[in-house]
Image 1: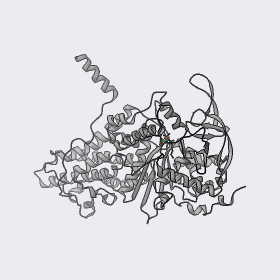
Image 2 (image 1 turned 90 degrees about the vertical axis):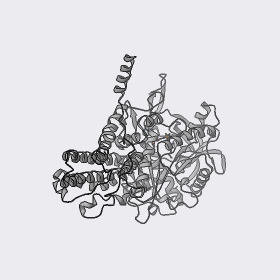
Image 3 (image 1 turned 135 degrees about the horizontal axis):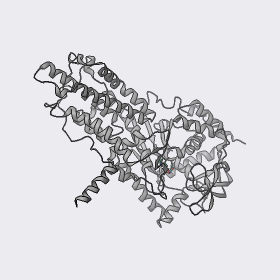
Image 4 (image 1 turned 60 degrees about the vertical axis):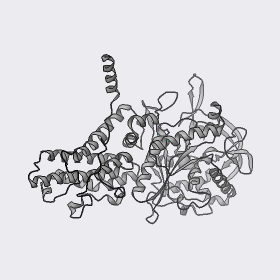
Length: 568
Ligand code: ME8
């Protein structure tokens, strides 16, 4: 029988945000999260990727004038962590603190501008989880039962028989594995607490149908709808204390420990002050997750929230995975990409640019050293860096000013130039659309195409060939440089969420002040429209060298070291 209260005290439909990704005009708050990462192993490139995506959206919202909060952190309870600490012969909390610090250091050193860093071993979190549990319990949504079935410790996940298959382990022994993750599963049978997940199936379906943007991209929305066609059994939400000590005890029953996923998901609420005042931030929550944890975020989490009478997240942004050599990164394959080492090799901004320019949310992407080098050299060093260099070089711009635009001189512009102006004028709207839907690669593609057009414009009119002694020529030269600098100002402003350091150098070189770098400053080429340009006539900023240094491919590196070997 369904408990009365399951048909939710607060009508669930009013708890759901309509129009999902459209923020209410009067609410300028924005809240974005990454998954909280397990501390059983060191951070890898995939973790950095999720953080970079969320950071990009957070910075974008700040640029647009939103009051944005951005949370990340570590998931520290559960059997997997308990076993990892045992294997390292360390006390669980000491072990967790060490690894959690590595994540925090990685994010800090890669310019991930999180405003909150949450650890599930914190007291504030324990209080939130205990409260959340009690709310579900008091509504009759949790009952004592027994669970018998498959469990994957690696995924900390319960599986139905149809989600399990046969495989051979490295020693050739037959084992049962999760069909989705490939991780080993074990049969378990124990008494524990169950959550009435089955009750929520129609509510979840309704939520997804009424909010087509709730899970993005669309293919993952479809995946969740497909899961909901099948049975949705009740979920075990505790483990016997004898098996799992490393976790939060069930309130009122110290013999049971709260299931690590229930514990972990509540982190998103803890950060914004739950169980105390949390209504400024909770209704505007956006989660960034990898496709591997979709079930937990798009089925369990909304069901828990509906049960607790809380609003659902506005959008769950799902991304696919990075593979190396076409395979999932794993310690045993030895193909794990160390994000510390690679960010040092390619610079923070280089790494960020590559991940966001090549990462496609819909499908997996393969990571190779030479792909990174090729892309960064072409787009950051040659195209963008080259354009800035050309237009600010003392040979072309001896006075080092933002030169004047002359409408008469601009009559010499040809059709392609007008196309470029139109493209740059509409660029902010195009970029906005793609940033907001987390298709950052499309935003960067559009910016990159405009940079190429601007380079074409400069190349076509070859300002270095103009003779300054004739004032008409001088005015045309100044106009060409003015237009190119205006383009660069727009690119630099729009690129801030992706490459904050490079954008800062670029805008500083153009003489653009800190308070002139936001959404409201994206008016392009105002002089062409007959209004005043605040930058015209201003001195350029100091030259801090190349925007991005060209990188060497592995082949070039090998050749060099071979040659130097010969010379010795
Ligand atoms: O699942 N490519 O933590 P986790 C891209 N603690 N992203 C990847 C990736 C890859 N190859 N590998 C991992 C957990 N990720 C839980 C989450 S949230 C309440 C609890 C990213 O350390 C991606 O975001 O296994 C994925 O979902 C997450 O790391 C899994 O991190």
